[in-house]
Amino acid sequence: MKIERTKNASRNILFGIILKIYQIAVPFLMRTAMIYFMGVQYLGLNSLFTSVLQVLNLAELGVGSAMVYSMYKPIAEDDTKKICALMKLYRLYYRVIGFVIGGVGLVLTPFVPKLISGDVPSGLNIYILYLMNLAATVLSYWLFAYKNSLLQAHQRVDVVSKITLVTNTFQYAIQILILVLSHNYYYYVLAILATQIITNISTAIVVDKMYPRYNPEGNLDKDEIQQINHKIRDLFTSKIGFVVVDSADTIVISAFLGLTALAIYQNYFYILSSVMEFIAVVFTSCTAGIGNSIIVETAEKNYNDLKKFTFLISWISGMCLCCFLNLYQPFMELWVGKDLMLSMGAVVCFCVYFYIQEINKLFNTYKDASGIWHEDRFRPLVVALTNLCLNLLMVNFWGIYGILLSTVFATLFVGMPWLLHNLFTTVFDKKYLSGFLINLGRYVAGVALVGVITYLICNRISFSNLWLTLVIRGLISCLIPNAVFWGLYHRLREFKECVKLVDKMTKRKFRLSGLILGEK
Image (cartoon, rainbow, N blue to C red; front, side, top):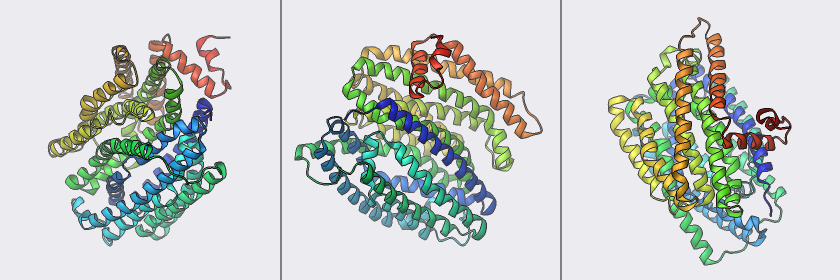
């Protein structure tokens, strides 16, 4: 089966962006409502449960990524029998995973209060709330989760986006009524549980209609199962690395600094992660297409694609960094007030964290799409342990600064160099690495330049009306980076290819290549 990579990526990005706008705007209103109707500690509690359950999701062991990767080839060859056998194996694995998460989660229940420093909101039973969140996680695996693999492998993530839009609307509507009318946090969590059930069942129904010929039946050869198990084993360290890096910060802040400090940190991180998830739509939408390209296209073509995507992500991330640098503080003052704000130094740390994570995500997208988990199996574990050790050490001296810088140091000095080495010894020719690093260094210098320029300008702009300050600074933070980047890079091949790519994805509706590149 031929995968229409550009068409599917365009569709996935479109609906993914719509979903992300929705998932940023509405939860932001929910977060604001919780602050004013229930108190800031509830936000910290939400973040803590999310992080603990991410740790429990280690039981997933990377099964999803391994199974989706295993489907790329049979889909390209239209091998229905093998796809059905993979679905059957996927279903079995996810049922086992649900039992493991449930069992380990129950064992950990008595220790949950020890992860909270200081007081918790009065009248709440931490154990009951934890078990309700645990039930939602377990059901996410038991209820037809294996059918999602078909949508991901066929590059139809847009279908998931549409379903999530509908089910999330139901969830948020119920939750906002609960916050305003009853202030009952138990009902608030119960709405999450109900939405998880509805989402999984709805997705299964849609998948059955789209792909009626695929049913979980048949068996794979023992050798094939062994190969998949090897991929899962190799992905285990990646899963550990992701969970520790992503969750350790939250758990360490809760345990050492308390729920209020965690809530303040999470207010900033919520804005940052919302934009990161927005950009992640591009990664998610293109992963299956990149995997297909690695199989059917030449190595040189795939390397040129990497250069193109690196340029594009660096441009987008650089502009976002300028916005964070100049808009964070006036926005937070307007949203939560000065009492719940961090220092400007923390904002700079958040900006550096953001840019490094976005570039690193691109490299990880190529790692996942090419399936080099075996070659990369030790790196995520070492990065995670480095991050955790630095977290525990630096939080005692520098608090929030230490939490952010520990992730930056672990990623920049351990994770990224190692990952680039793995990519350029397995997927791409090693001779290209030096040239790639020179280009990347050029992009980093460009981002640093626009960051300094926009900050020096915006730092002089402050009105008594915070809305006016945000608007003026926002215009400067968007216009200047794009103008500087265009001046620096418009002659590069990567720039021209990105313009043509966008033109192609929009089906030439805006004639970008003709306007920007001067073509007729």
